[in-house]
Image (cartoon, rainbow, N blue to C red):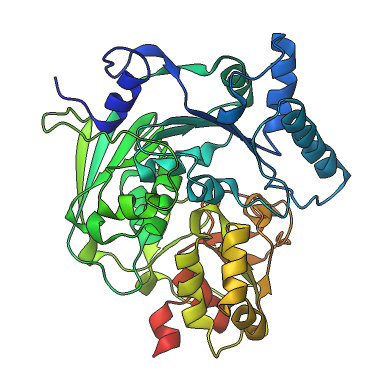
Length: 420
């Protein structure tokens, strides 16, 4: 019987062929945690009673949520992460100044490769399916066990296959595709299932867009979101991969729980209204929605391509006098490139804040928390009640083009309205 990409990767990491619904023990290639989730994992790790992590080369620790430290509690959490990393001789510990937002940093560092199984104490760990890996988020206790043993228990998920056809409209990217898709299938449409993103239109989607789509598979309830490895993937990996990897393709007779077909030529830039990512509508149906803030960045849209799109719209323009714009690159490397190539100067001249890499505003942590009644359009991945601050604030999700155009006009707007 044919297998999906997810089933093939899990079979290779269990020592036998797997099928959906089976409970299996999976050997992992990488274990990931951050400054919010790692302290819990560390406490549980110590309760297990083992002295050392299973492999210090295969543990990744990134202080990125409340780092640089926003207050005393954040400082103590980051210290716990730092001390554990040093005591365990964890090679892949990324200190402030050398770090980035974990789900941008990890693939850019070549730490996750096709065919890998990576588990992380963060729901958006599914980001790495963009390079053909099986990556999924787990609870901090599960991650403690993974750090101790190098394995995890999980139920093999079924797979949904989403096929994209047609040619993209201008300004439409991965964020628009995934918002449209979640709007179509719902926030529980892929609950505990892997999603294979495929179809001829995917060949025209850059890695930045693929990372965005895999990142938000969890917003449809997905266990993982995977792309097949193609020439775009290989070009991304060529300067990054430092070890061999194995590419797994779905069999022609693979069994899917369902197949969804989407014509991308019909998709406009999308905006997800409060308070669910599935509450998506095309920019032509948004109407007049004034904003107080625009955020461009995060693990979903803080990559170089995203900053270039935003810069193209903000170039020679100013952030609306009644609005704030915060731009957050995904890594120090992207930050430095933005400085060297003039994007940082462009953002500041436009009246935007240009920040060091941090998850800060995405989870209502800092660097952009909203007051009661405020509205924000953001390239982040969740718009639940109170996600970015006060429970009476409103958060709208979009891609970088819409976020930048909205910053200029002080209301949610499409880029064509600004660029015409």
